[in-house]
Amino acid sequence: MDKAWFDRRVSVITGDITRLEVDAIVNAANHSLMGGGGVDGAIHRAAGPELKQACQRLRETDWPDGLPDGEVALTDGFELPARYVIHTVGPVYAKTKDKSHLLANCYRNALALADAHDCRSIAFPAISTGVYGYPFDAAARVVLDALGEALPCHSLDVTLCFFSDQDSRAFEAVVAEAL
Image (cartoon, rainbow, N blue to C red; front, side, top):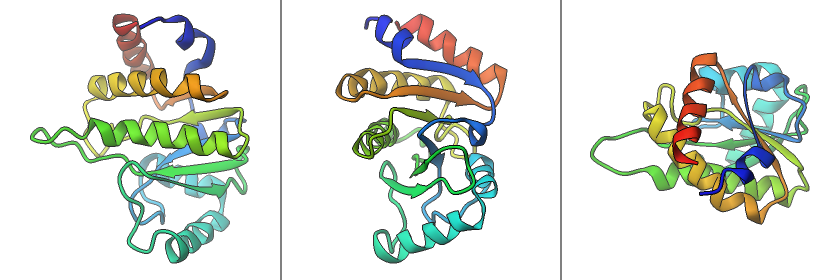
């Protein structure tokens, strides 16, 4: 895989995704879309109460049984600097079942939805690597493959926003090994 596409289109940073001035941020949501812990809770707090109301409307109209793994839903960003929030549910890791296609779908579907709404920039957190238990190195490889496959189809700049320097360095090590 050629590293040039990655260097041109992807930035890896450590920071607070709720402060990024991009067209869309991706929320590592839960099935209910009603907020939770980690990045999901931080995004809901930063966006304000209108985000929860928008998510309730999504549940009533589009996703009455909850948002399935790998699918995406869009809301406004409300009080966030980002214009949109793209909600996606990553898979819970299981050693006995390969769920990498569901994790890849989180990234592919978010990119397609952002592109459909004329976004030029999007920021992702590390989906499924927190309480959902997906091993970081395995998730990083899935992300690289999904971005490498999807980015040629979309004119988006991607920011991978990690919460800690340790996660940023770990991701960059996977990139250096893979590309």
